[in-house]
Image 1 (tube, rainbow, N blue to C red):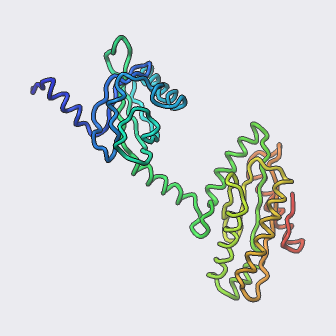
Image 2: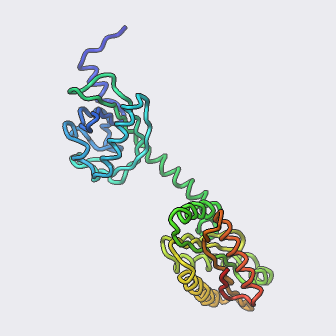
Image 3: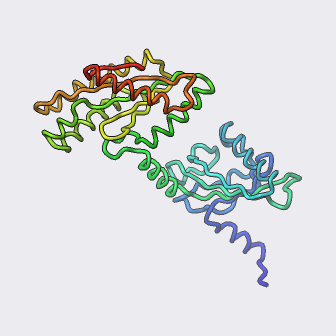
Length: 302
């Protein structure tokens, strides 16, 4: 069996592709090895001897310490993902990636103590490229390709989450359901490309008029649904009227001859007796139908 001298072992540790840390239960950096390629990592050797609480903010330090504690108490391998920028850690060499890095951390308990403390081996691998790809795929799976709004899948997920919050804390949450009046006539007389322009125009009105906390979605065809968190019916009604009025102005600017496109809107909110978010969505959809029956181009509350 080949035996390695200490100098060779140190050379192997220095050549490790990913930065590898020995950390004690109290969060002290005992040793830092590898990760010398500054295209992917910052040099962390200056961290040796310092404590986690000295080099990162309180929230990050608490999370890292909890990971160490969980690893030591479970005796098993822990795998975590997290993001960090170079300026998030005090004492790092400035040379290294300028943007934030996403890491996969693999944490394993060591079978010896360091200065009387239990310790772990923490290997941090740069997974930024993979993370970006996963984010792109997730965004594509949740986005309507024509309008850039959320799609039905994303909306349903968000509605469920907000209904859970409503059930627990009674946070007022409203839902708008609306579509474009006479879009079929536009498609029949001008073609679906012009019809798509009208749909996109309404989506742009939503993007302009709604808050960053609101979630507008294309629910299907020319039907849109907007989730309005922390919004009661009175405020939601004013927002619905603003969308209706701005949509009318926008449709006029498209200058489509022979069209009288407008927007009919149904409005509802979560009720205490609702067993699911779909109950409120059904009411908003029924209110939309009522707006159509009453002559279109109006907001109806159910």
